[in-house]
Image 1 (cartoon, helix red, strand yellow):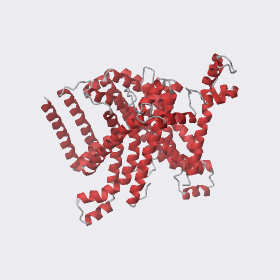
Image 2 (tube, each protein chain N blue to C red):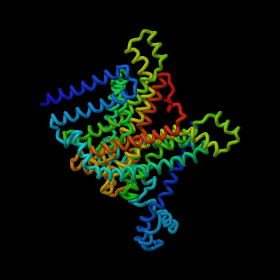
Image 3 (tube, each protein chain N blue to C red):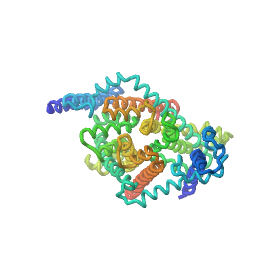
Image 4 (cartoon, chains in turn yellow, brown):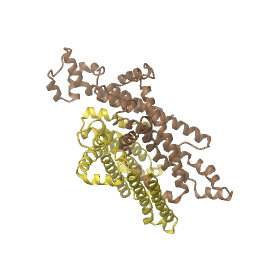
Length: 283
Length: 306
């Protein structure tokens, strides 16, 4: 049985790889369709191998549930998953993300007025961004209670520093020549800020916003490990792990993955609209 | 060097706002405590105090300011209390004792370093494969980039349980999570680095009649070093966060994550705070170490660190 399982898995792998190698070497490799098709085939190969190995080796669902089992659990538990999504992503992560981003933005603009402050904030902010801020979760849960407010606070602190550092760096990005040009137009501080320096800072700001999307989800989920109402993705993950309902855990992970990619994609889409003039956006 | 004073100012401002915040944050607890010790408190009923904000209460009880800094279980400990707790658990304890943060730090750090080593080596290998194999590039790279947008840490508790049920426990499950987190930054950075030599440099090697292996060892690998270090700095702090989070939902008994959980569950805020700061210091030291290595390596290679 083990032999058949491994041979059939290898056969699937070999077939997928053969198709991909042919596609990659073919003259059509530069077309958009093939560039989407190749990773899709690769992902599908992995899923089929996973399914085959779990079934043929009779791996217990307590260790590793099959993709079909996860999919059916996902379909059955849609209402629960939606409630968890609402609690963790919409209430916790999104609120915190907006608060943190807004705070970082305001601080960056204030700090930008003084070169002294800017030089102080850049290294300190960069340093804080590297620290395990998610560890503040138990403290915020103690302060603000176990509902979504404490999750939003953790998220706000986590996203604050990357956005701050990027915004401050972006606001410094104009050249002396560009600023001089604004001066010859008779533009004061505010027109220069809004017409020149903020637009020029946008690629940096969006870089920070994109990094922060993943941090927001991590913060909201991990904070729930320290206490939550009986709803939420972090709550569901830790209780389902306790009940060995791993297909439910995987279903939550699928939700997290979809939400994370969608959130990132949304920011990247807005970035494309806002910074259409930037060289990196040229097709 | 000229940024030393600004940095100190910013750090000082953070410290001052922390110290100021201690008073209103702890005022409710202090007022209750003071009343039990027959010190006059205004207003004098707990219900009336509950109605007021921390700031309002603080303004009416200026004589209690001193007490807010010495509570045994403060909501917000003052910096000197955190410092004292850290001194007690790091310096005064035997490093093998379960009360020592050095012991717990080592538990987390060993998982971090093991995972980081595994993740980095696999990441570099995969990056080399991606650069030299077109099919691999087209299949794997989109997934590697997409995986950056997924909150991978959510996997942590499940991986621990999964490995636990097939009999792998202790250091390795945490290390696997750390490895996973440092793996993708290294792949993405290394691929970028190995591809950074431009057409002119590659053509020059061709005119020298260099073999593919020579092209790799003498041009691509050295060119990737700055990118590798940038990834390593991201990877090591991600690894540490991974190891800490891996200790959270699974009832680990040792490590920074376990200390944070213990402090949280048994109502000992100082334990949580000390673990948090110790973790921050560890992360800072690791990133600092890699910055130093980066500067030394790049200088020996004749490059400037970014």
